[in-house]
Image (cartoon, rainbow over the protein chains, first blue to last red):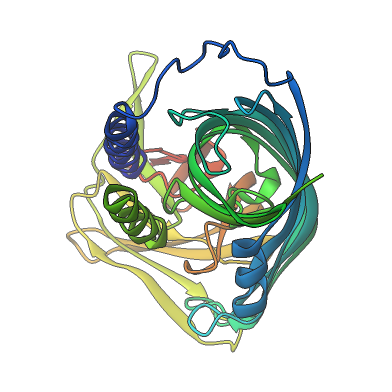
Length: 233
Length: 162
Protein backbone atom coordinates (compact mmCIF):
# COMPACT_ATOMS: atom_id res chain seq x y z
CA UNK A 1 0.00 0.00 0.00
CA UNK A 2 1.08 3.51 -0.64
CA UNK A 3 0.45 4.50 2.94
CA UNK A 4 2.78 1.85 4.31
CA UNK A 5 5.68 2.78 2.11
CA UNK A 6 5.37 6.49 2.88
CA UNK A 7 5.21 5.92 6.63
CA UNK A 8 8.14 3.52 6.51
CA UNK A 9 10.12 6.12 4.63
CA UNK A 10 9.23 8.69 7.27
CA UNK A 11 10.22 6.37 10.11
CA UNK A 12 13.51 5.35 8.55
CA UNK A 13 14.40 9.00 7.95
CA UNK A 14 13.58 9.96 11.51
CA UNK A 15 15.56 7.01 12.87
CA UNK A 16 18.55 7.99 10.78
CA UNK A 17 18.26 11.51 12.09
CA UNK A 18 18.06 10.32 15.68
CA UNK A 19 21.00 7.95 15.34
CA UNK A 20 22.99 10.85 13.89
CA UNK A 21 21.99 12.95 16.88
CA UNK A 22 23.07 10.28 19.35
CA UNK A 23 26.40 9.89 17.61
CA UNK A 24 26.75 13.67 17.80
CA UNK A 25 25.99 13.51 21.52
CA UNK A 26 28.66 10.91 22.04
CA UNK A 27 31.19 12.80 19.96
CA UNK A 28 30.66 15.86 22.17
CA UNK A 29 31.75 13.81 25.10
CA UNK A 30 34.66 12.14 23.39
CA UNK A 31 37.06 14.69 24.81
CA UNK A 32 36.15 13.69 28.33
CA UNK A 33 35.85 10.02 27.59
CA UNK A 34 39.05 8.11 28.10
CA UNK A 35 39.63 4.37 28.00
CA UNK A 36 36.00 3.77 27.03
CA UNK A 37 35.92 0.03 27.57
CA UNK A 38 39.32 -0.58 29.12
CA UNK A 39 39.27 -1.40 32.83
CA UNK A 40 41.23 1.30 34.64
CA UNK A 41 44.18 -0.12 36.60
CA UNK A 42 44.26 1.18 40.15
CA UNK A 43 43.93 0.10 43.78
CA UNK A 44 40.13 0.51 43.89
CA UNK A 45 38.38 -2.87 44.38
CA UNK A 46 36.51 -4.39 41.43
CA UNK A 47 33.16 -4.78 43.21
CA UNK A 48 31.97 -1.48 44.60
CA UNK A 49 28.41 -2.27 45.70
CA UNK A 50 24.83 -1.90 44.57
CA UNK A 51 22.49 0.96 43.89
CA UNK A 52 18.72 0.93 43.80
CA UNK A 53 16.83 3.59 41.91
CA UNK A 54 13.36 4.74 40.96
CA UNK A 55 12.25 6.59 37.85
CA UNK A 56 10.37 9.82 38.46
CA UNK A 57 9.39 10.51 34.83
CA UNK A 58 7.11 7.47 34.60
CA UNK A 59 5.66 8.33 37.99
CA UNK A 60 4.92 11.89 36.87
CA UNK A 61 3.37 10.59 33.64
CA UNK A 62 1.16 8.29 35.67
CA UNK A 63 0.04 11.08 37.99
CA UNK A 64 -0.41 13.79 35.38
CA UNK A 65 -1.61 11.82 32.37
CA UNK A 66 -3.48 8.68 31.48
CA UNK A 67 -0.46 6.43 31.03
CA UNK A 68 2.91 5.89 32.65
CA UNK A 69 4.93 3.41 34.62
CA UNK A 70 6.23 2.66 38.08
CA UNK A 71 9.84 1.57 37.63
CA UNK A 72 12.70 0.58 39.89
CA UNK A 73 16.18 -0.66 39.10
CA UNK A 74 19.01 -2.55 40.72
CA UNK A 75 22.48 -1.67 39.51
CA UNK A 76 25.83 -3.26 40.30
CA UNK A 77 28.90 -1.08 40.50
CA UNK A 78 31.95 -2.78 39.03
CA UNK A 79 35.00 -0.64 39.60
CA UNK A 80 32.95 2.55 39.07
CA UNK A 81 33.19 1.73 35.41
CA UNK A 82 30.70 -0.97 34.49
CA UNK A 83 27.16 -1.04 35.83
CA UNK A 84 25.12 -4.15 34.98
CA UNK A 85 21.49 -3.25 35.58
CA UNK A 86 18.05 -4.78 35.83
CA UNK A 87 15.05 -2.48 35.52
CA UNK A 88 11.63 -3.74 36.54
CA UNK A 89 8.39 -1.88 36.18
CA UNK A 90 4.66 -1.92 35.74
CA UNK A 91 3.24 0.10 32.87
CA UNK A 92 -0.36 1.24 32.84
CA UNK A 93 -2.65 3.06 30.47
CA UNK A 94 -6.18 4.11 31.25
CA UNK A 95 -7.28 6.38 28.42
CA UNK A 96 -11.02 6.77 28.90
CA UNK A 97 -13.42 8.06 26.25
CA UNK A 98 -11.07 10.07 24.01
CA UNK A 99 -12.67 13.45 23.44
CA UNK A 100 -12.37 13.13 19.65
CA UNK A 101 -12.59 9.43 18.85
CA UNK A 102 -14.42 8.27 22.01
CA UNK A 103 -12.06 5.31 22.31
CA UNK A 104 -11.20 3.81 25.68
CA UNK A 105 -7.85 1.99 25.89
CA UNK A 106 -6.70 0.07 28.94
CA UNK A 107 -3.68 -2.03 29.70
CA UNK A 108 -1.56 -2.89 32.71
CA UNK A 109 1.43 -5.22 32.67
CA UNK A 110 4.92 -5.70 34.04
CA UNK A 111 8.05 -5.33 31.96
CA UNK A 112 11.77 -5.69 32.42
CA UNK A 113 14.97 -4.37 30.93
CA UNK A 114 18.45 -5.79 31.36
CA UNK A 115 21.67 -4.22 30.20
CA UNK A 116 24.81 -2.44 31.20
CA UNK A 117 25.97 1.13 31.60
CA UNK A 118 29.54 2.20 31.03
CA UNK A 119 30.99 5.20 32.81
CA UNK A 120 32.77 7.31 30.20
CA UNK A 121 33.84 10.14 32.50
CA UNK A 122 37.56 10.93 32.62
CA UNK A 123 37.69 10.44 36.38
CA UNK A 124 35.99 7.06 36.86
CA UNK A 125 35.97 7.24 40.62
CA UNK A 126 34.31 10.62 40.91
CA UNK A 127 30.91 10.67 42.60
CA UNK A 128 29.46 12.11 39.39
CA UNK A 129 29.22 9.89 36.34
CA UNK A 130 28.58 10.21 32.64
CA UNK A 131 27.53 6.98 31.05
CA UNK A 132 26.28 5.29 27.94
CA UNK A 133 24.39 2.05 28.02
CA UNK A 134 22.37 -0.54 26.22
CA UNK A 135 19.21 -2.41 27.21
CA UNK A 136 17.19 -5.35 26.05
CA UNK A 137 13.54 -5.17 27.14
CA UNK A 138 10.43 -7.31 26.96
CA UNK A 139 6.81 -7.10 27.97
CA UNK A 140 3.78 -9.32 27.56
CA UNK A 141 0.52 -7.48 28.00
CA UNK A 142 -3.20 -7.51 27.29
CA UNK A 143 -5.25 -4.59 26.03
CA UNK A 144 -8.91 -3.66 26.18
CA UNK A 145 -10.18 -1.33 23.48
CA UNK A 146 -13.75 -0.18 23.27
CA UNK A 147 -15.84 2.68 22.06
CA UNK A 148 -19.27 3.90 22.97
CA UNK A 149 -21.92 2.61 20.50
CA UNK A 150 -22.08 4.62 17.31
CA UNK A 151 -24.04 4.71 14.10
CA UNK A 152 -22.77 3.12 10.91
CA UNK A 153 -22.52 6.10 8.53
CA UNK A 154 -24.02 4.22 5.59
CA UNK A 155 -26.25 1.48 6.99
CA UNK A 156 -27.33 3.55 10.04
CA UNK A 157 -27.41 0.57 12.37
CA UNK A 158 -25.93 0.81 15.86
CA UNK A 159 -22.36 -0.47 15.91
CA UNK A 160 -20.45 -1.80 18.89
CA UNK A 161 -16.68 -1.87 19.18
CA UNK A 162 -15.44 -3.79 22.18
CA UNK A 163 -12.40 -6.05 22.26
CA UNK A 164 -11.00 -7.35 25.53
CA UNK A 165 -7.91 -9.18 26.69
CA UNK A 166 -6.10 -8.98 23.37
CA UNK A 167 -2.78 -10.70 24.05
CA UNK A 168 0.25 -8.75 22.81
CA UNK A 169 3.99 -8.78 23.38
CA UNK A 170 7.04 -6.77 22.40
CA UNK A 171 10.82 -7.08 22.45
CA UNK A 172 12.81 -3.91 22.10
CA UNK A 173 16.31 -2.50 22.55
CA UNK A 174 17.47 0.82 23.91
CA UNK A 175 20.65 2.85 23.61
CA UNK A 176 21.02 5.49 26.26
CA UNK A 177 23.10 8.39 27.40
CA UNK A 178 22.89 9.56 30.99
CA UNK A 179 24.31 11.55 33.82
CA UNK A 180 24.39 10.66 37.48
CA UNK A 181 25.36 13.15 40.18
CA UNK A 182 25.83 12.74 43.91
CA UNK A 183 23.35 14.86 45.83
CA UNK A 184 24.27 14.06 49.40
CA UNK A 185 25.82 10.96 50.95
CA UNK A 186 24.60 7.86 49.10
CA UNK A 187 21.78 9.78 47.40
CA UNK A 188 22.21 10.38 43.65
CA UNK A 189 20.11 12.12 41.05
CA UNK A 190 20.42 11.35 37.36
CA UNK A 191 18.72 11.45 34.03
CA UNK A 192 18.98 9.44 30.89
CA UNK A 193 17.81 9.90 27.32
CA UNK A 194 17.04 6.72 25.45
CA UNK A 195 16.68 5.80 21.83
CA UNK A 196 14.32 2.84 21.57
CA UNK A 197 13.90 0.43 18.72
CA UNK A 198 11.38 -2.39 18.47
CA UNK A 199 13.00 -5.71 17.70
CA UNK A 200 9.76 -7.65 17.29
CA UNK A 201 6.17 -7.23 18.33
CA UNK A 202 2.86 -9.02 18.31
CA UNK A 203 -0.06 -6.60 18.42
CA UNK A 204 -2.72 -9.28 18.51
CA UNK A 205 -5.79 -9.42 16.29
CA UNK A 206 -6.64 -5.71 16.30
CA UNK A 207 -3.84 -4.46 14.07
CA UNK A 208 -1.88 -2.17 16.36
CA UNK A 209 -1.62 -1.20 19.99
CA UNK A 210 -1.20 2.26 21.46
CA UNK A 211 0.63 2.26 24.80
CA UNK A 212 3.12 -0.56 25.41
CA UNK A 213 4.16 -1.01 29.08
CA UNK A 214 7.74 0.18 29.53
CA UNK A 215 8.06 1.31 25.92
CA UNK A 216 5.48 4.07 25.79
CA UNK A 217 3.34 5.24 22.93
CA UNK A 218 3.96 3.55 19.62
CA UNK A 219 4.27 5.48 16.37
CA UNK A 220 5.50 8.64 18.00
CA UNK A 221 9.03 9.56 18.97
CA UNK A 222 11.58 6.77 19.46
CA UNK A 223 13.13 8.82 22.24
CA UNK A 224 12.39 8.34 25.91
CA UNK A 225 13.74 9.75 29.14
CA UNK A 226 14.14 8.81 32.76
CA UNK A 227 14.91 10.91 35.79
CA UNK A 228 16.25 8.71 38.54
CA UNK A 229 16.69 8.97 42.26
CA UNK A 230 19.17 6.32 43.40
CA UNK A 231 20.75 5.23 46.63
CA UNK A 232 24.09 3.46 46.89
CA UNK A 233 24.01 0.39 49.10
CA UNK B 1 29.04 21.72 32.17
CA UNK B 2 27.33 24.25 29.87
CA UNK B 3 27.66 21.74 27.06
CA UNK B 4 25.91 19.10 29.14
CA UNK B 5 23.17 21.51 30.09
CA UNK B 6 22.52 22.33 26.44
CA UNK B 7 22.50 18.62 25.74
CA UNK B 8 19.88 18.10 28.45
CA UNK B 9 17.66 20.89 27.08
CA UNK B 10 17.95 19.53 23.53
CA UNK B 11 17.16 16.02 24.68
CA UNK B 12 14.12 17.08 26.71
CA UNK B 13 12.75 19.00 23.73
CA UNK B 14 13.22 15.99 21.48
CA UNK B 15 11.67 13.58 23.96
CA UNK B 16 8.65 15.84 24.22
CA UNK B 17 8.05 15.60 20.47
CA UNK B 18 5.27 13.35 19.34
CA UNK B 19 3.00 13.04 16.35
CA UNK B 20 -0.31 11.53 15.38
CA UNK B 21 0.01 9.11 12.51
CA UNK B 22 -3.39 7.92 11.42
CA UNK B 23 -3.49 6.17 8.06
CA UNK B 24 -3.97 8.47 5.11
CA UNK B 25 -5.70 5.69 3.20
CA UNK B 26 -8.44 4.84 5.67
CA UNK B 27 -11.38 3.72 3.56
CA UNK B 28 -12.49 0.13 3.90
CA UNK B 29 -14.38 -0.87 0.74
CA UNK B 30 -15.12 -3.94 -1.34
CA UNK B 31 -13.54 -3.54 -4.75
CA UNK B 32 -15.33 -5.07 -7.75
CA UNK B 33 -13.80 -5.77 -11.17
CA UNK B 34 -15.94 -6.38 -14.23
CA UNK B 35 -14.63 -9.50 -15.94
CA UNK B 36 -15.41 -11.85 -18.80
CA UNK B 37 -14.12 -15.11 -20.12
CA UNK B 38 -12.15 -14.96 -23.36
CA UNK B 39 -10.54 -18.05 -24.85
CA UNK B 40 -10.93 -19.78 -21.51
CA UNK B 41 -9.21 -17.00 -19.58
CA UNK B 42 -10.76 -14.49 -17.21
CA UNK B 43 -9.95 -11.00 -18.51
CA UNK B 44 -11.05 -7.44 -17.71
CA UNK B 45 -14.27 -6.28 -19.30
CA UNK B 46 -16.36 -3.13 -19.56
CA UNK B 47 -20.04 -2.96 -18.62
CA UNK B 48 -21.93 -1.39 -21.52
CA UNK B 49 -25.04 -0.68 -19.43
CA UNK B 50 -25.37 2.08 -16.87
CA UNK B 51 -25.09 0.88 -13.28
CA UNK B 52 -26.69 1.95 -10.00
CA UNK B 53 -26.30 0.17 -6.65
CA UNK B 54 -28.49 0.59 -3.58
CA UNK B 55 -28.69 -0.95 -0.20
CA UNK B 56 -31.33 -1.04 2.49
CA UNK B 57 -30.58 0.88 5.70
CA UNK B 58 -31.48 -0.25 9.17
CA UNK B 59 -34.25 2.38 9.26
CA UNK B 60 -35.85 0.80 6.17
CA UNK B 61 -34.86 3.54 3.72
CA UNK B 62 -32.81 2.85 0.61
CA UNK B 63 -29.37 4.37 0.28
CA UNK B 64 -27.62 4.93 -3.02
CA UNK B 65 -24.09 3.49 -2.92
CA UNK B 66 -23.09 3.84 -6.57
CA UNK B 67 -24.65 6.30 -8.97
CA UNK B 68 -24.94 6.14 -12.75
CA UNK B 69 -21.75 4.32 -13.62
CA UNK B 70 -21.03 4.39 -17.35
CA UNK B 71 -18.46 2.18 -19.09
CA UNK B 72 -17.72 0.64 -15.74
CA UNK B 73 -14.60 -1.52 -15.47
CA UNK B 74 -14.30 -1.49 -11.70
CA UNK B 75 -16.03 0.07 -8.71
CA UNK B 76 -15.92 0.11 -4.93
CA UNK B 77 -18.77 -0.28 -2.47
CA UNK B 78 -18.71 0.14 1.30
CA UNK B 79 -19.35 -2.75 3.64
CA UNK B 80 -21.41 -2.41 6.78
CA UNK B 81 -19.34 -2.10 9.96
CA UNK B 82 -21.21 -4.89 11.68
CA UNK B 83 -23.61 -7.43 10.30
CA UNK B 84 -23.26 -10.93 8.96
CA UNK B 85 -24.65 -10.07 5.53
CA UNK B 86 -25.00 -7.01 3.29
CA UNK B 87 -27.84 -6.97 0.77
CA UNK B 88 -27.24 -4.88 -2.35
CA UNK B 89 -29.57 -4.04 -5.23
CA UNK B 90 -27.90 -3.73 -8.66
CA UNK B 91 -29.79 -1.87 -11.40
CA UNK B 92 -28.45 -1.98 -14.96
CA UNK B 93 -30.08 0.04 -17.74
CA UNK B 94 -29.15 -0.31 -21.42
CA UNK B 95 -29.32 2.35 -24.13
CA UNK B 96 -32.88 1.34 -24.99
CA UNK B 97 -33.93 1.94 -21.38
CA UNK B 98 -34.41 -1.78 -20.75
CA UNK B 99 -33.46 -2.52 -17.18
CA UNK B 100 -32.57 -5.46 -15.00
CA UNK B 101 -32.56 -5.63 -11.21
CA UNK B 102 -30.39 -8.07 -9.29
CA UNK B 103 -29.97 -8.68 -5.60
CA UNK B 104 -26.50 -9.50 -4.25
CA UNK B 105 -25.93 -10.97 -0.81
CA UNK B 106 -22.44 -10.65 0.66
CA UNK B 107 -21.74 -12.69 3.78
CA UNK B 108 -18.80 -11.55 5.85
CA UNK B 109 -16.97 -11.67 9.16
CA UNK B 110 -16.22 -8.31 10.78
CA UNK B 111 -12.79 -7.79 12.32
CA UNK B 112 -12.29 -4.81 14.67
CA UNK B 113 -9.22 -2.80 13.63
CA UNK B 114 -7.33 -0.36 15.82
CA UNK B 115 -4.54 2.08 14.97
CA UNK B 116 -4.39 4.52 17.88
CA UNK B 117 -6.69 6.29 20.31
CA UNK B 118 -6.28 9.30 18.00
CA UNK B 119 -7.67 7.47 14.96
CA UNK B 120 -11.28 6.50 14.38
CA UNK B 121 -12.08 2.83 14.81
CA UNK B 122 -12.62 0.76 11.70
CA UNK B 123 -13.74 -2.73 10.81
CA UNK B 124 -11.90 -4.93 8.38
CA UNK B 125 -13.86 -7.79 6.82
CA UNK B 126 -13.43 -11.30 5.54
CA UNK B 127 -15.86 -12.16 2.77
CA UNK B 128 -17.15 -15.67 3.37
CA UNK B 129 -19.78 -16.03 0.66
CA UNK B 130 -21.36 -14.15 -2.25
CA UNK B 131 -24.56 -15.05 -4.07
CA UNK B 132 -26.89 -13.17 -6.37
CA UNK B 133 -29.91 -13.35 -8.60
CA UNK B 134 -29.14 -13.72 -12.30
CA UNK B 135 -31.07 -11.13 -14.30
CA UNK B 136 -28.07 -9.20 -15.58
CA UNK B 137 -25.41 -10.72 -13.38
CA UNK B 138 -23.96 -14.02 -14.52
CA UNK B 139 -21.57 -14.83 -11.66
CA UNK B 140 -19.65 -13.17 -8.86
CA UNK B 141 -16.37 -14.77 -7.83
CA UNK B 142 -14.38 -14.08 -4.65
CA UNK B 143 -10.86 -13.21 -5.78
CA UNK B 144 -9.56 -11.94 -2.43
CA UNK B 145 -11.64 -12.24 0.72
CA UNK B 146 -9.65 -9.84 2.90
CA UNK B 147 -11.14 -6.31 2.93
CA UNK B 148 -8.78 -3.79 4.51
CA UNK B 149 -7.43 -0.31 3.82
CA UNK B 150 -5.67 -1.64 0.73
CA UNK B 151 -7.56 -0.16 -2.21
CA UNK B 152 -5.42 -1.98 -4.78
CA UNK B 153 -6.89 -5.38 -3.95
CA UNK B 154 -9.66 -6.66 -6.22
CA UNK B 155 -11.99 -8.56 -3.95
CA UNK B 156 -14.82 -9.60 -6.25
CA UNK B 157 -14.87 -10.44 -9.97
CA UNK B 158 -18.33 -9.75 -11.39
CA UNK B 159 -19.46 -11.19 -14.72
CA UNK B 160 -22.48 -9.70 -16.47
CA UNK B 161 -24.51 -11.57 -19.07
CA UNK B 162 -24.06 -8.91 -21.75
